[in-house]
Amino acid sequence: MDNTDNKNEVQEKIRYTDEELQEFKEIILQKLEKARDDYQQLKSAITHSSSNDTEDTSPTFKVMEEGASALSKEESGQLAQRQIKFIRSLEAALVRIENKTYGVCRETGKLIPKERLKLVPHATLSVEAKLSQK
Image (cartoon, helix red, strand yellow):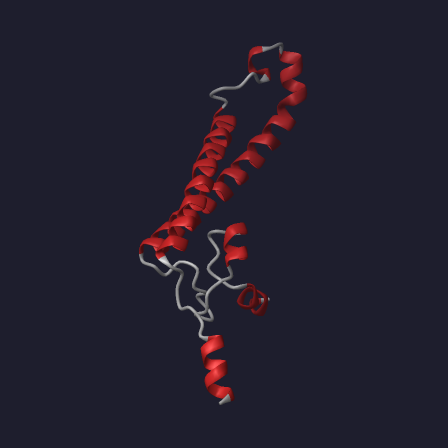
């Protein structure tokens, strides 16, 4: 009797419903739009396409800020690379939504909790699986 009761209570979902997937899709599309905007801003900072940098001011300021400018370009380049990776992760999450595999932990096969997916919509691991990797 205990087994049957437990089985009914613990019957786990194997995937999110289409409505839930649609909700996640909207969250991901919003994050993707912002990520692409951020990437474009970083890209323009690197190429100075819309900059009021020292390039158009006196040579004295240019010499003083060359070091800071180089560091800033390097940091912007690293941030741009991270942003590209984030964009690709979000795009991959959209593919998983279309395949109806979104939200399933790639290690355990169990559903990743909604709370985690709302915070990290491109997550492919449950917290337990991620912690066991360390």
